[in-house]
Length: 139
Image (cartoon, rainbow, N blue to C red; front, top):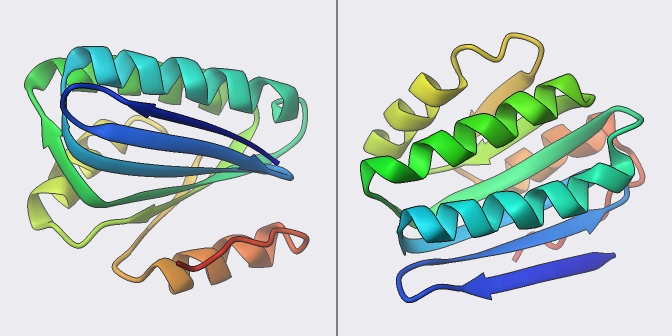
């Protein structure tokens, strides 16, 4: 398991790889710089597993999003992911605005099996059905 943590002046993220899955935790209000940093960390973590099917748990329950400039890097990394064998994306979010923005961003990605969850444990259970060796801490 390898983890990358970063904290920008505003907002932070943690990207962890476990087996064939990435675990992302977002918090605070992001700038475009934070978004680009996260995408670079994401790419570095995903590249070694991108030759086989893989999934992602994205927990945005502490994320305040940010300005409009954060979305382009996220869209680009999702495009790369879809072309490089990402099959599953479990999104944990309780904020309605986040759900709307994420759904809008994810609409073009038809090859990804995407599910939204308000509970992290249910998201983990869903991913573990596809990746049985996955052991994610629910905390």
